[in-house]
Image (cartoon, rainbow, N blue to C red; front, side, top):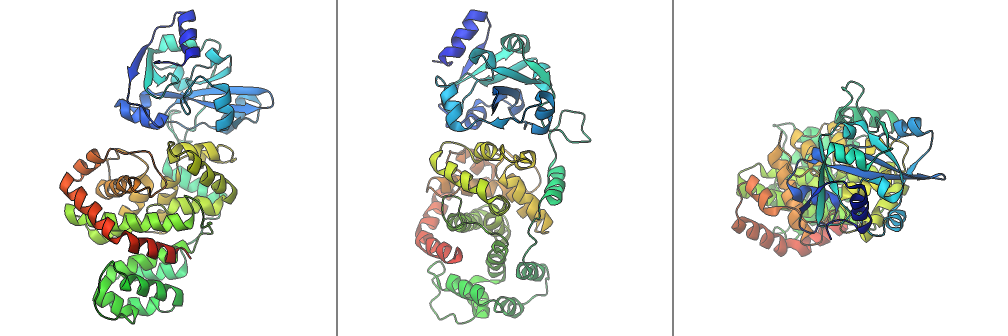
Length: 456
């Protein structure tokens, strides 16, 4: 069936005309929108809110985020998002995650963002995971007759009233509202050393050897079967000059030192153990992909290694919400991280600045820490399929590496990506993808061992 039974009956009773677009069965609404090939701005969605007085459906553009302060001013109510269980109970005839933005069919109170009121045509889910609905604006307004119309979504203070908060505004709010961790002193010294073109292997080794724990981790890395070095490695300087090279040692040391800024649990799909496993695999894959595509291998490695730091920052600042997100990730493998983050952080007073996702938060942190621009972009945009812009090659490398890792069950995203499209963007053919996957298979046991040692 193209629509949920209740919605189909409602449209028939009201004589509302619509067209439906068949898509491949999708794991989430995000995936269905992406699969449609239509611009995201053409789509609208429903966000369900509740308080002691009942449920309210807020209808807004798919690519927008609700302003809960504005909704409170409009309604005089302290509404909170429905849980997945409450939603499933209310929309029992709809597939999970596919709630149609037509509240009248379920006798719900409706808030309609004025951006939607002015739309000439709209597209939305009809309640199933394999079909979308398209109708003209007049028919949609008829379907939601009686809705209350207002500005519902987040807009910047200098905007014309149509734009969501910019990342600069999010960064400003984050720094004002929360105590963001500074880059640890050792990480800062390593970063400054890497920026010095005259720096030597001895200087890097001496800096690392001030920290016995890091020294042991670097030596363990150099002695691993990843590099198959036949001789003995007894010092960090030997690890730099004989096996790893200056850049690789500097980058892994930078990662080790930087992670110490965060207090995040080890367990769970989003815990520190899996964070290090994901980061190391991604770093090695990015380095290999860079080698085949003619990009800077050292920079690609660093982009892969540090791209997910936003998740650590979220866990550090909001431990209870992070625990909930960790649990949701395990039981909702079909959902995107973005949708899970919105589900969890809808309960936080300042959810508006967290709704941009952990990727953007990581990019903000990396900019605050003055990391290279490519690293900032790779972190900030890795959750955005189809990104085109500054340093897009490195963003696409991280996205392709993560897509390949999903096939191994590694990472925080489990829903599939368009691997051929990402490979084509980097001008890589199937034979290259096969080789990098074979390469990663050969060193997987060593990466797993190394990840476990780094997570301690």
